[in-house]
Amino acid sequence: MNIVFIGMPGSGKGTQAQKVAQKLSLPFIATGDLFRSQIEKQTEIGQKVKQIIDAGNLVSDDITFELLKQGIQDFDISRGVVLDGFPRNLNQAIILDEYLKIDKVININLSETEIMVRIGGRRTCICGATYHIKFNPPKVENICDICSKELFLRDDAKEESIKTRIEIYKKNAQPLLDFYRQKGVIIDIDGDPAIDDVENEINQKLGL
Ligand code: ADP
Ligand code: AMP
Image 1: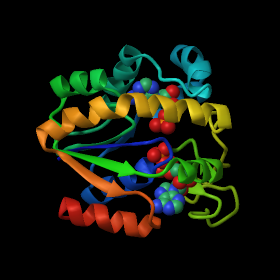
Image 2: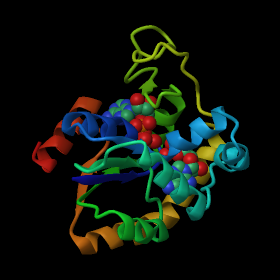
Image 3: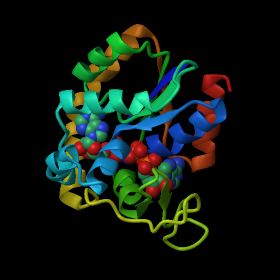
Image 4: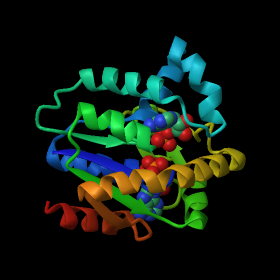
């Protein structure tokens, strides 16, 4: 089963996508994590995209899809894959459609006010794990439960960048959702309840 998570930045896609991937024993691939890893390693791509990402803008579809394809090669996706952060616009959905049949699209809905609270309190690990200082704190303050590395506040968590990301999301969301609604694969999820409750709703709607 190939599953895609879409929704506003900070709506909980990564948090929930990792849970679904774990439950189904499928690889989890997030384009944002792939980019952050490139930036951390100061690769050519990383240096090219850092300013774009920090400002809250989208990287070009070509670069992003190439990186996704490279990222996918590291995994066995014969039983399926869980994608987070790709596709983010109609063009990416069309490109992806030629590459991979998407069975389910989890669309997480959340208000903009709550988005600011979520992103402001988010702490991220380079391994891809995410926490929230209030809603999902790590066991030891600022240290990743999984790999013991220090957590960080993402460079794109500035108010201006968040606003840009929300605006870009709003511009792209409708055509993207229409594309998948036509295919009948969308599952709408209310992202407002606590993490466990959102997880239960997703599991129930996916029949897990
Ligand atoms: P996205 O991948 O959509 O950008 P994340 O999964 O990183 O969003 O979640 C954003 C922040 O909100 C993180 O700090 C995460 O721990 C927190 N979070 C996610 N889901 C919930 C929830 N249902 N209730 C409270 N906080 C949440
Ligand atoms: P995320 O971790 O999903 O919030 O992504 C962080 C940033 O990486 C985004 O704000 C974009 O700059 C970039 N990015 C991630 N996925 C994509 C994508 N599918 N298309 C373009 N840019 C992306």
